Image (cartoon, rainbow, N blue to C red; front, side, top):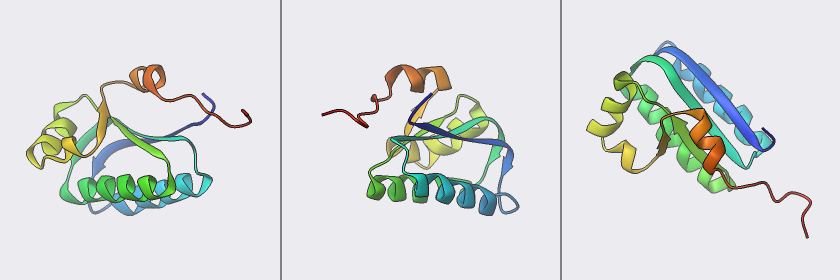
Length: 111
């Protein structure tokens, strides 16, 4: 979909993988899409460093004028976000289809 950038994460989000996620979010934010989606449906473990990367991504996206959303429905992701109350900060959808259905339309080229 035009205007929607998706970063798909698979497996464990911990010390070993968090730098790759941060680098990908950096690359996506440089392009300044209207919406940046972090797709965590296939994440099996979300550790504190992964949560920190999501928080950082959220604030950096906000500063760039990019809508930042997370897709997650598995307990291994939802529960850590709830326990840390980060689910109150981030916009979390259960599916990518839900994001597509509710994301603001691109206004590029409109007068």
